[in-house]
Length: 487
Ligand code: ZN
Image 1 (cartoon, protein in one colour):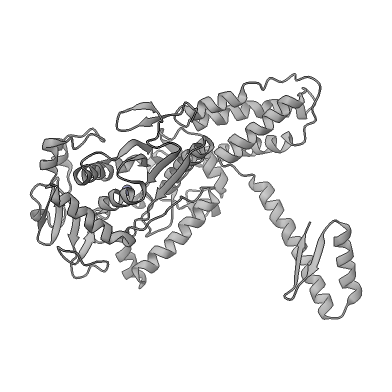
Image 2: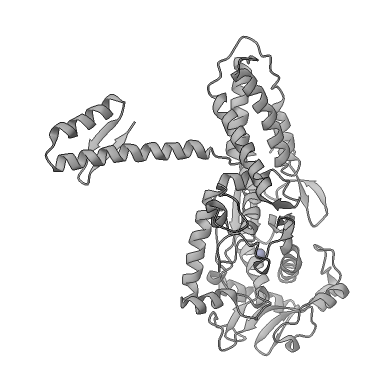
């Protein structure tokens, strides 16, 4: 594979040229959502960031197996407030079966991701569907001597692991510092050290989601599912593991320790992390009242929003920042993105209507190379977008009759917009899409009127509609249940 893609590896703390283990195959694992509530901005950023990587790697010619898990086993560590598993809590409050909660929010998550133009991953494994594999993984860690059982739960022995390995290599933490920051957990006294983390947890009687194991009726620790499912679907060594920066510690640090303990070697070559999103300069949080779901953004129904923002505006806004920079959402910033995206889409639309001249007065040479260079520089989407804006200026000047463009330059420009705006950044022209849908509705309406006329034996009206549509270029076919049409 001939390319110069460099990505920032959190583990080595530098940009490294991407070289897969087994080219042309690439294994990529990204930590997915915990499904107990509606998707919010915090879900959108990693999904979009790794969607860009997924698209770009495929564009480079790789066969990518993209695994994004669904965390559908609740975990104590997730809910510091009351120590109750969040999915189980939701199930109890809404009188639902836990898997009903999972499916409900998963369906909504998929719908939101689809609206954002996020391609579905190759495999979307559920933690709850891999309990047997997780138990086997715990056994491997125990056999290697890095875990111990205590009162029906199994803990990872961090102190012991740290003697022969480096616990903290990803986050840059050291254990002493971590000792001070470790939260008090239920069953703290069962552990040998406060830094030890649960691989298997014995369920309390009121805990709804639990499974049998050699140690107790219980449930797996949160970190375990990613080590287990990553290994199962991508092998003992794979190329890329991604997620939000908030997952570096403890989640990914623990994953490295688990996999290294069980397999005898590290499994991930490139660790990639997207930065966080703030709202009006503040961290997102339910207690801060600035927790805005994606549906609320799409509908504008939230007290902090002055208007609705389309999914593509959200996507464009996220891509206007480099994935390792923070992004701050505000109405002003989103409105600027909305305008910017409209300008870009309008230019793309105008591009299709330009007529070539013998010579170009606009300079669009080198555009493809510049966009490629930006993508190769750790997926620098804001720079790609700025190049597209430069191109939009040239397009507009030709469109306004102030400049000319040659056939060759025109073809190149079309190819660049198609590849970078549409295929790689995944931007869609929502306005064109809306008008397309409106026109389909209008044709359906006419044909419904025709059906009604036929039912009433009003042949004159029925024929009139049919003839008018046929004349306009539509082909109409009557079927048993109604009609079919095409243009
Ligand atoms: Zn994970």
